[in-house]
Length: 412
Ligand SMILES: Cc1cc2nc3c(=O)[nH]c(=O)nc-3n(C[C@H](O)[C@H](O)[C@H](O)COP(=O)(O)OP(=O)(O)OC[C@H]3O[C@@H](n4cnc5c(N)ncnc54)[C@H](O)[C@@H]3O)c2cc1C
Image (cartoon, rainbow, N blue to C red; front, side, top):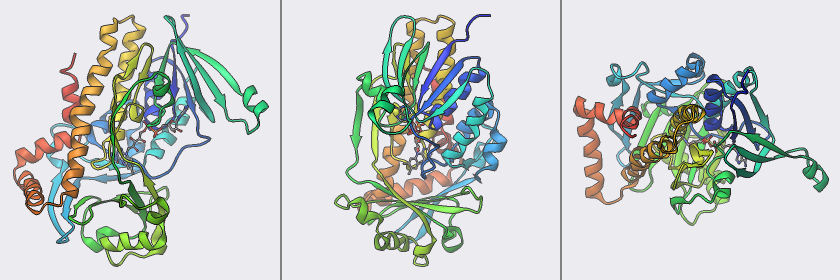
């Protein structure tokens, strides 16, 4: 029997995990190398849009994925200055466009948890933790990857733990600081915001106190915010509040009890500190790699693009990359031309610029606008979009990335 083509995936975060399972299900031998010693369960992505749910359905565990999260039919915009609702958008308008007319809030670590055992059950496939990709070389026939296994400290242990693997292709899904992208010298073009984002997780129930839904964007002339509900590992429900830090504020200052409480009480005076179960700050970037393919190496997910989390688009885009990539690798396995393989960059890079960068930059401007007239215009635009069903539907087709999937099909 012919040897199955072998794909190494650098990074076992959600993008790498999805890419790995998709490749394995299409007959590739897959080795996932994850530097961390376990699955990262810090609060990051949760919102999964209809187009992405369609992809997860193809992978065969959509029911489990939905059951692990919260089904959100609506999302709302609020004016924080007047504590009033500006507009509500209803995914039900997409019923004729997708089998999943809603977003699902399932935390990204749960997605990886669902994939690891499924991948391990497929012949020739493995998912290794504590395995860091440290070197990459390629030639006409394949890719050579140097892996450093985490076997403890000390020079001798580290030297003994270095291993060299060979594969037909390498997927770089090793996140925003991608070692592989840096080793390949691929420019990561864009900018980093001067402020960071604070993410606070609390058991305080904003739905009961504010009357909001489970995904809310709050425009504020003093401070914007985003509040949304996730299920939590215990499925009891908890809320995440995202707000900017001040540019001069250190992480310690932003995460100190007094700042955390004052930020939460700025949203709802009834918030209490003992309800806070997690606090963290993140650097925020808008960056896109200059190209997504270098020979036999393909970049996907945060390794190839970063954006602010307003709109919940980054990981969704990473999953879309992964699904386009598996088709690209199938074409490569069948001996496709360089031109065809470069379509991966043409599609994924273009879509990231047109949909993800454009929407997230605009989403942030909309929430943080301080000029009263411009602010009013932006909020009025949301009201008018909600009021006109055709406009609301067009807006939802973009926010749900259904329009981006359709646009992809037009890029050859
Ligand atoms: C607060 C916040 C909220 C967000 N909310 C949303 C949302 O609602 N919806 C959405 O779509 N997106 C959201 N995002 C974005 C989303 O979290 C990221 O896009 C997502 O984590 C990208 O997944 P990834 O697998 O590409 O990268 P990562 O999650 O960064 O995973 C990369 C993996 O590679 C590993 N790694 C790194 N270097 C190496 C190496 N050299 N060798 C081997 N392994 C390596 C890392 O340990 C890590 O596990 C949010 C982000 C933040 C910060």
